[in-house]
Image (cartoon, rainbow, N blue to C red; front, side):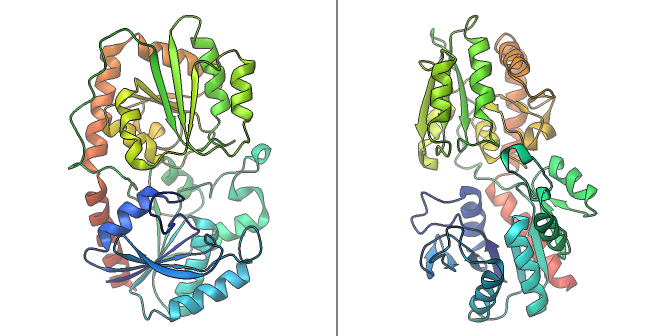
Length: 372
């Protein structure tokens, strides 16, 4: 098959930084049997095409405006780029706004079936942090248009429920970086004396809400020797570091910045609990990575944590530091329950590894193209 994928960015030529690893895993797996062309709307400064892990990338560039080309100019540039590479069997837009919306328009233009993945804030409105497509009329129109695709895809049951509220009937397939072949056995914690090690892998941002996690840490620290590792690009200009100092836990929080995927294994193997603090999470690839490494998961009731609770994860319903701290202490003091949840989550994540996901998408593409 000849597959066109429309994305915002996340496919840097380095293949290491400024990438979405789950997209790389899917596209490279599909490229072993199909011709895959990914069209990036606004990543590199200058438009260019290159090959990455066996698939073709065509970046439209963003030569002047800080957020890239306008929607109309993007649409025109995308149509020109897609025309230059022939007829595609199916078009796949990942994230409803703008990639999904423009993928739908390309489907009309070229009379091809379209799949749209909703794996971000398509159905959210959190005005206090300027997050979610539902905050504005323009965003709502974009998502409504994206949902007219031939098929709508989401990664979690949590997002499927939200999509259904907007009139869609989605198919659920996780996006993952986990490979069963590359996974070692279940994690074996270090029996020696050491702090309880908490881990989160996510950009430091308002929606990921690490402020909550630092506040919870301050509540846990008087009773438990605890350490928190935060891995991810800092988009908040040191705000969280200053907050940790204010709360008196700066010696207990380690800010590691961005780490490439191959560097994460050591952090997962040393972690005792993976903690998700997000105000919204469509799914959560890092949760899958932690689960595959045998790390038990606690988090806000969103994404995979919502899907898995109570058997594969602990979900908190009240998003505050007290609830998070209570969950951390409770898991620490109940190792039998922690181990059982970790094993159940690990089995789920390994069963749905990158090869399984690629096979599911291949079937979805063939089915969608065949129905057109």
